[in-house]
Image 1 (spheres, one colour):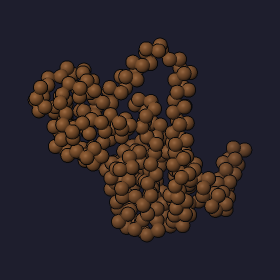
Image 2 (cartoon, rainbow, N blue to C red):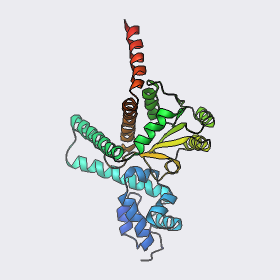
Image 3 (cartoon, rainbow, N blue to C red):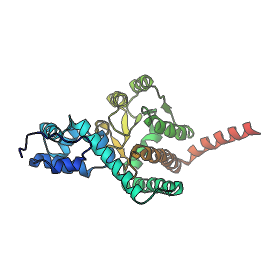
Length: 289
């Protein structure tokens, strides 16, 4: 069988079966091995440049492999792999019988707990969290950048930090985010959230803030992404594995927990900040009387 002659594969033939049906060059084998080894979330956001860098194969090898396996390009090849994983997970569950709702709840909560524990280890083993808390305490301005569902994490962080009386701002409209970034100065802190690390509007605001001298802190699920590589401090979320199709949802739950981590760290560093939160609670309590 010729190594270069494309085969007319059945549309539903799994990725693994396609790779077994053709002769692969060494570079193509490295690409396949890498694609099969990485978590689903990384696979979902991987670009040709990322794959080339991590597999050591050229982008032309990636294109050639895609065509050889019957896919128009990397995008379609990635999609096929993700669908294969989801179908396999569903098949495994059906083989064992239908799950009860309670069993599913335990599985979801266990996945959240596992990721939270991984996040705790990551934060505990790094000095980056202490650096970030120092920067937040001294900052003239703290601006949060995020779009779409990442904006929910920004909102969670904003709601905790504003209770401490910190100079924190968040607007979910990206033109306003860029406007705020344009007004930042050295010593300010820009905190950007993007699970893919490739959201254009978030990168735009972050680059603007950093150009003006602000410190850039990122929360991403892709430590090798464009956004993460620009950061002074990057907090990597423990993505991948777990429940098919749920990686970003689990990441958001863990990222929301970082808001409370920052709140408690700031109070521990500057106990007087807690008085601001107590004053807010007292205001709401008075309104309920």
